[in-house]
Image (cartoon, rainbow, N blue to C red; front, top):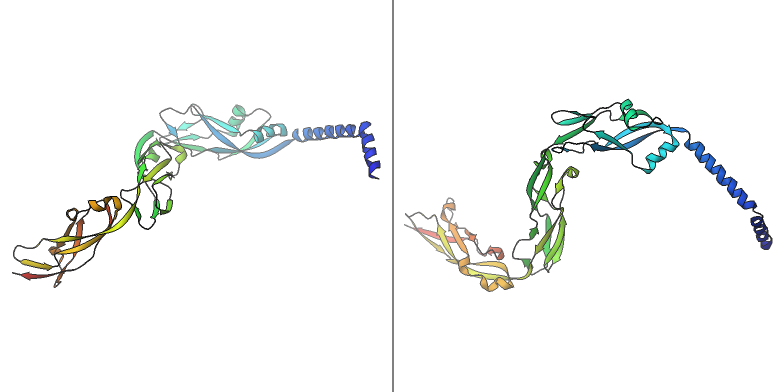
Length: 319
């Protein structure tokens, strides 16, 4: 049975019956397409705005970027709009009205029909009826970069110097009304967990609204940090009293207390007692208070988390 079917198909091909059928089918499809495309259709298309002859000393903000136009035309014309992004050209020399702060475009559908569309296209309506373009002069401003980072180190590791960012500032160029509001730029949030090696990473800047109207000298920054092994250190630091009236003699105990801190192994031996200044301010004694509170007002930049191990210093007054 299968052999008979194959034999009939082969004979049909040889006799060109199928080829003739496919040819007629193709002709019928082409005629149908031409019939459809020759008919008129109504639809709304979003046209991009192309600005021409904008004054060089001014910058136009992207307030109005599209114009929705309802058209009536035949199918062949619609093909152009589907395959190419349609645009409306606005000439700032003749198509707009300038006010103190904006340009206004309010041309009629008839004007568009006569200037930017051929006779085969009929414009039925456009939305919005009026386009408004804010304009401004350019401003150049240099603003600092703020790092938004969550850095957690492995136990026993830390950094001696703060994380460095390069560049630490960004040049912003754009309309005065927008640039004047920018005082700093923050990075997007970055997180680093269980860090025990030097950091060399990148972070993106969090760009403000209307960033399409602005230019930035960079959109990313490099952050670097030298990570070191840390250990705990302790030194017995002498206490000094301040703001004690000349009319009294103040005796206090103890005369020195332990101060603990974290320091890198490389800087451990460089930390000295004279690097610390520990004071008790007599002027902060209230009422019948019988103790002084020690304050660490000076310590080396190389240490982390300094802590006074005794919070009260007993004292007596002898006149």
